Amino acid sequence: MRIPACERPCSAVWHHWDRDRWTPGSTPGPLVVGVWTEQKARLGEDAEPLLAHHRPSGRGLIAVFDGAGGAGSASAGRTSAGVERTGAWVSSRVARAATEEWFVDAVEQQRLEAQDLHRTVVRCLDYVRSPVQCKISGTMRRELPTTIAALTYRIAPGQVVWHTLWAGDSRCFVLDPDGGLQQVSRDDAEEGDALILLTEDPPMTNMVSANREFWINLEKGEISTPCVLLCATDGFFGYVHTPAEFEHVLLSTLITATDAGHWGDLLVETVRSYTGDDTSLALVAIGFRDFDDLRDRFTARAQHLSREHWAPMQRAAGSDRDELVTARTASWNRYRRSYERRMPKPTAGGLR
Amino acid sequence: MNRSNGNLQYAVDIVMCIDATASMGPVLDHVKDSALSFHERLGAVMGSKGKAISQLRLKVIAFRDFGDCPDDAIQQTDFLRFPDQAAEFERFVRGLDAIGGGDDPESGLEAVALAVHAPWERGLDRRRHVIVVFTDAPAHPLGSPAMTKIRGYPQNVPRSMTTLFEQWGFRQSRAALMENSAKRLLLFTPEESPWTEIADDWNNTLFFPSRAGEGLEEYEMDEIINTIAHSL
Image (cartoon, rainbow over all chains, first blue to last red; front, side, top):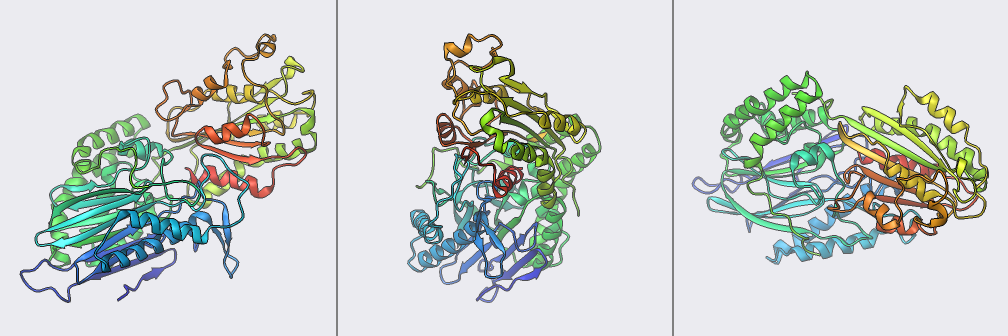
């Protein structure tokens, strides 16, 4: 079945709770939520978030794709209606289609190999690549550039086993009621510190593209249920004041929401109030009895974030820059230990 | 539930290195127009993305040829803050004449070196330090005694391409003068040495091949502006 989108101008929300086959005593089926927004109507360079779940095997996939506007701002052509499409717009959609194709094939063959994802993405980009060579070059230049942040999961009794696959600076996270938000990917950038990444926004050292070699990083892990797994593009986490504020966005909207669709709507409303970019987010909540259970389990964590991180930053926001910088550094120092607990160590590169 | 992104401050510094030798005569007016409209076009693109530049400064380094006439080989402004100092910027740019230079090559690398040594903004968040080079000629190699011994030759220009590369910086380099996260180099130059090597070897470059007598196409200027705007 396809999850229908609830579409509004410049945004869309998807949600579905797979409870049909749940029986008391088993792990409740997953709740999936997808959120997508664009800055300019019909020109958003993030693809729609990818949410897929294979009931027979209990495996699923969530993923986001951010067409890289800086490196791929050149036109890739026009639609039949005359709308110009950038290379970044095309590449995020192609990468999404390739990732979906890879997952469907892989889950049916019970063979989830990252090398196959890399091959599928390269093949699909080659297929749509323009035969005309662009005369603009340079080391920043990319043909059909996009990020990928994907998280595959397998639900087992009492726990979830996941694999993260990514290229670029979109991120994968786990979120649990006690440990809060933890990043389980590592940006392809020279810097690893999330606060510096937030304030300096350095260029990526690796991303998917049609004309340069790239690699897909692979990590794996597990976490006990109940928990939330999510992927997001930098439009969501790259325009807040501190890394903790992204978790505050997720949880302050959750504890205000009445159901999953409302949560998605609140995420749209909130992210559009602060972002300067297109955004996409995909999440799967596993092991919660119902939405009230999900909301109740994160209420204490949301209150902690509000007290320890959100309120101090609000007080500093009205003061001078030095006080603001001091407050955000203090927030990060208190937050980073739990946030980075599962973050992969830097490596020379993943799967090429 | 609404939040503001007003506390992330975007600081953009741009140095335009403009070849003002006689061969640029047919296109210099076009380059000037591009330079003069640059900040407004950048602001418009940023505005369309819902972002505002907190601080925009432009600096111009006009170059000719130390080997031909050292006295006017470099003419430059300080960093000028926009919009407050836009009139000063316009006066300087309008006053540039395409004269001298003799034969190719010209002193384009000296201009790039002076740009690298410019007093870039080090405060605020999300800084972008952009060098844009407009020329239709190759450049003299650095370190030639025939050049470095000329009276008035800038002392802070490195004596080799290797040193200039180190000052531009690369991953984990220690001698870099440019901030790795912030820097961008946009080259509107011919496909000749040293420009093609710089475009291929230095990080964060965009290369737009130019031909003598042909100016910057509108769509190319749009792409330069889009590249800067999208990287903020």
